[in-house]
Image (cartoon, rainbow, N blue to C red; front, side, top):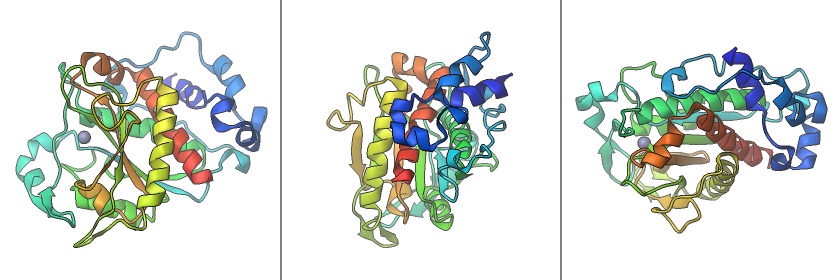
Length: 294
Ligand SMILES: [Zn+2]
């Protein structure tokens, strides 16, 4: 039930978002395209309302269509980096270990934040990662996750970067939700700044990452209907940082997205909604697809 619904939901992409040419190229009405999607959704289906579906079958039913035009990302590699790890809090010594991020040394990883009611950022990032993986696989991409709660902690931020590099990823998106003050709302995308220090050299990826970030931010805003951050950046929902090891050490196009502020009750209501997380994954996927289609 959920599997079928997820597949249907996954393609609720208004043709307008893709542009008509792209939509037609995808097979138009022949593939499981926008117009037939809504009627395909079982009428009694309701979206999961909490994080318990994180390991549910969201991604399992996604199969690329037989029509290669429906799989424009065939041959492309996307690495999804779900921030933190649900078990990090049980491994504080390990995650506090300092690792080299080029510019300086920094903690291996952190526990991440949570909503006031205890829904963890790590559960959120994994859930969105599964939804995003399904959407990208439907488009034909090869998708790799840096972690899937399949390791005791981490990986450390330097290893997270190396996983994307070793995969020769065409795009990497690191998923997060913020832990800021109440009243601070909205999403923002973080771009790598130009860094050349130690093992870090972002000069080749700053440009493409900026484009990836611009498209992911736009896609996310459209799909979720939420506003860019009212507390970080200039209102565009895009900021640049040079202090994140996961960006500094990347040799492939990479951005972070902070999907909202878990400590704000209005943002938390969104972040804890399965239906909203599906929109979030759709928006990020739209941005990645636009980036990779060029
Ligand atoms: Zn985070």
